[in-house]
Length: 478
Ligand code: F6P
Ligand code: MG
Image (tube, rainbow, N blue to C red; front, top):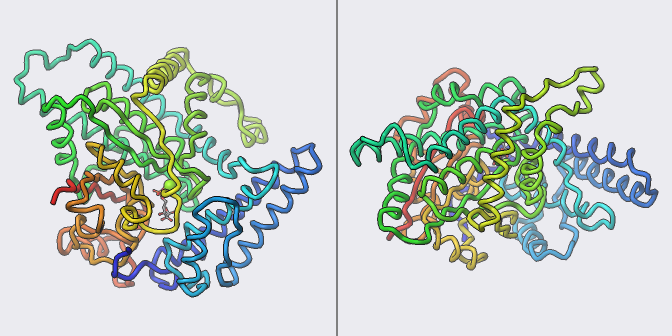
């Protein structure tokens, strides 16, 4: 069910696939080993300690196999239905080696294999090896979080009052203003993706903070090289005008922490403004690509909001070691966070915002397979006015992570989710991988020619850094 266009492969030395396999995955595995090692050393239960040690050995073995270009081995059966298809696909691919395998499959396999080490244990079944990292990066995005919390509360107060500076404006002016606000909310949500943890191996905390403030967002508008926000707004507005009772928007989530926070800002805004009546959020079932959202990250985030003072004022391990005490949180900021907690938990309690996990999201293949291998999910998404796919990995999966000519229309590159699918697709993706489509002719060449863009090396380096973005829409009609 996949595209016939060749996939991005770890064998291609000019690709980010190769760099990921060679440089990034070993770092990710090392920090997972450290995390479990630390957890083991704090453990008092001897049996759990022993089991934890064998998990670190399993992780070390995986790292060894990767770094020595061994073959990928069949996954341990942990009782979940996806294992059989992972293993069947491994065989169908001819039991490839780490440095000669389709990037997308291998990277999914990597995280799925890590997950089996925990899921087949007795005492570590629900342990999320990336949880601490997710929380600590979220904590470091404090300035942007506080800024957005204040803005969000102002906005919802205004929307709830039914009055604004536009009270005397014409219908047309009002809609224009609404579209501007919609676009800004989506941009916040888009750039929130630039900061995922699996890329932290090359971005500093300072870079991240810079990416998150409102000023940088404005400056970044020209970095959105495909921009279909207007079409997405039009589809929600049309549905609203048609007065349809149920108008659902789906968000296929990407990362926890700051990105989830901004996703909820967008979700809350869509509900409060009446552009949607229900938001369905799609998290992962297992720890995934370091920073992706699992259901517990959602509840952890709400807990942070309600206990913001405690969260920000309790020194982290590093702060303790350096003897640094964190800045206190002002009463006003703490109150804003609390208000946010109240409004989001009310939306959740009323069923207007809900989580809907599905095993499909952590399978090893692209979304081209969805109609055949996850037909009920496919049908479910047709019920939505708009399905927003967040982040880089979702984009890779939509396009099959294939080596498309960058001028290929997006609607063609997403195959069965394209025209006539009945699903309206919107991607909010900052580019962190080689695949990119929907560009005007010549744009790729232009970007390659820029400093750091890759030049004549044959590598599309501009597309690796998360500094450029593509917002692509397909209306799913025949
Ligand atoms: O390119 C780096 C990378 O880790 C890719 O492997 C993956 O597609 C992506 O980043 C994850 O990013 P995101 O969280 O935006 O999906
Ligand atoms: Mg991610």
